[in-house]
Length: 77
Image (cartoon, rainbow, N blue to C red):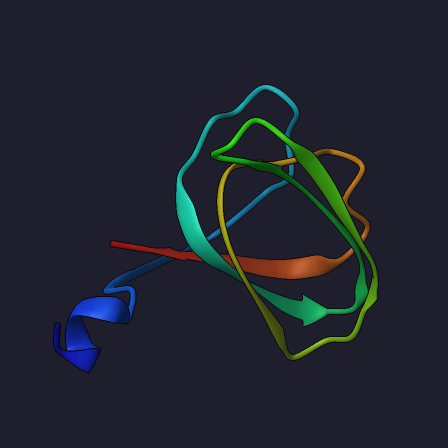
């Protein structure tokens, strides 16, 4: 497997929502805060105090409304 096949090729801004299903392999946090993701495995996970400029590597289907971080960009293939 080449390195290029492991790097997401698509990216888009995200607005947190408990009802909107999206797919992502990673989430870039532009401005810090808490990040709440619903994972592909069916778990709700909270990252507390994530600093701006961080990329969270996690397969997810929702960025939950309880997320306080902003300037979010999802990455996927």
